[in-house]
Image (cartoon, rainbow, N blue to C red; front, side, top):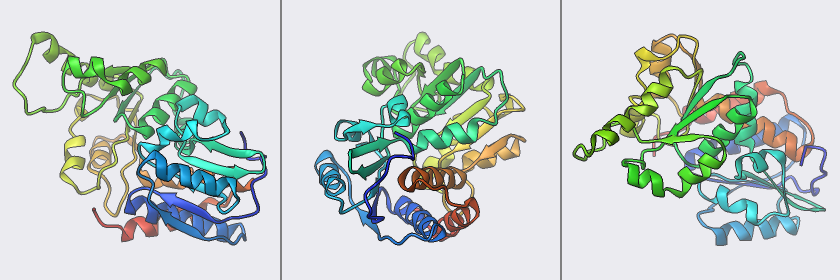
Length: 311
């Protein structure tokens, strides 16, 4: 469902997620509403399960809210609670934005839309992409890469530590249906080596990443955390293509270790602030039917991220 669908009159909205995401997206939405000369309240909400999500959907149906932004596991629950999914949510199977209209509640995946816009600059032929993570943003990344014509998409997750776990993973099974190849986590596991086959399988992601035109990191961690440093070691940077584009969804004050490594090796980097800005633009365009100017939105995202601290 595109931006032409008329929303309810209310421009009040709710932002769910971690405190850093609420602060950043809240600042973006406020700046966008101001740029479009629209008035509305931006509420911080807790959305940790399907029950809380259903309450927000009821508020959308009653016109008390015009839009809700979501993150995390509830993005996978959202499609079954709405009346219709837009093309972006149908592609990924997730919805990170819900919009109330006179015709019902519609779900969209603005993370997918942001990936499509930002990665469209990668030159053809688009052969290989790799994704780190298995949450809602990872599904958006895989679906976007498939939409952009990438022929091979490898993906890994920190929870896929053995062939047995990978085989039994519901997320891995769903990602296969999107056209991705789930692989074992290549980093240290803390466990003793198992079979030679498992050891060889652990190298599979590194081999795919070495030939990838696009490398996408979607795990939501604080930028200066130990987890962020560990994630930066998932890729053998010295083995990557010199023309690879690296996208990391981590945002905050300092650049993420993942992007620092990418830049150190001369690769093109797209940071979390760029993703947030583009996602905010897509969100407001879908919601209001008008695309706000990028400059004030990007500036608001930068200010919010500069103020943020690691949780």
